[in-house]
Length: 553
Image (cartoon, rainbow, N blue to C red):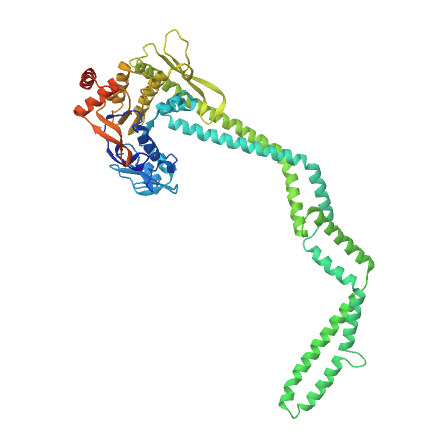
């Protein structure tokens, strides 16, 4: 339950430290006193977006902190999942907003994201504001009510998993069909490309070899002349390097008879002669092999022109890339043969998965129908003492044309306040006061089915008065079973008198400005507050006596 609220510099609240009690509490105050400010502050704790306009004028930041006692509500797993310390006796949620617009959220003094705060706060407190009455007419809310009271989490999870798998298969089938259509449309073009590439019989590394050969063939005479000249330099009738080396060898051998140093040079000269003879031999071989061959030159040029043409056409830089492209095209064309088979396989899987999802949707529908029978009886029984004696309330469950994420059902709350009036969608026929009473009944049922520690009703009594208001208050009191805390913000004395605890919102003006405060009242002060609610601007003795009577009842 909500144990305390601590607010600093929030709108008109300069400083507020409010201790709250368990059970049924009421909060009253004149219009404009600032009850909505308290709800706005609590909505920050609920994870709503912030605005620097909420910071009290002259302050650098504002803060809202709430302390909860959460023992017995099964929240330890949620805290562990979010890697947060858990103290069942005191759970602190705090929001701070600075003038720079920066908002910070904390749970038990640990920084958290707004999403984390929203998730945990939603398990601690439920705030029902006036505009939420409008959601009663939406299918999303109505289905949520039925599913909550059906306690069908297991069936819903099973259906959701099956339906998601069906959607995945449908998406795969769609993509495969698109691929098949696109590939089939390009089949003729791809075949033409493949034939051109295959006919070229490309080999990796071929281009470099051909370019080297072309260079030789294009300069054959020049190369042959240079090699012949090199041969003459090495050995010729006029001399040459080898002849000179042989003469040098002979001279060194003669000198080595008397010089050890000269003798050491002999093997080196001999080695040089052997190396030069080998070079001469290879040069002669290369010169002999190098011939101008016009036919081969034309063939090599034509082959390279084909390779260059293919590279330019397909925007590739090498034969290796052309070969890779060839393999890709062949794989695409080979894939065409398996498209039909794969599509038929996926179609069968989709049919099978849809049948599974439908089966699980039927199980989900069964839980909803069973719960709806109970809900219809409970809501009708609660609405009779709330001033709708001839109420007829049913939940219409009809099949959807196709499955969606919620299952196979369309759910509508049907309502009639009179025996003779036809039942219609509740949003179309129920008055504001009737909507409020139905919503209170629904909240009462949900409270009994869920572990919600604190529920706050903001003027749930809209459109009612007198004995009906008293019955609404009694219903809220009954909701406090199982240690639940219920707080009603109200303008009706009949509801205010039923509260086990009474808080008054006041607005004060002085030289320093306007401030809103909340005070707990009891005894004679509470009598006067309820009397004021009954009599208006002029407090009468009759109103005071009526207030005493209400508080005694």
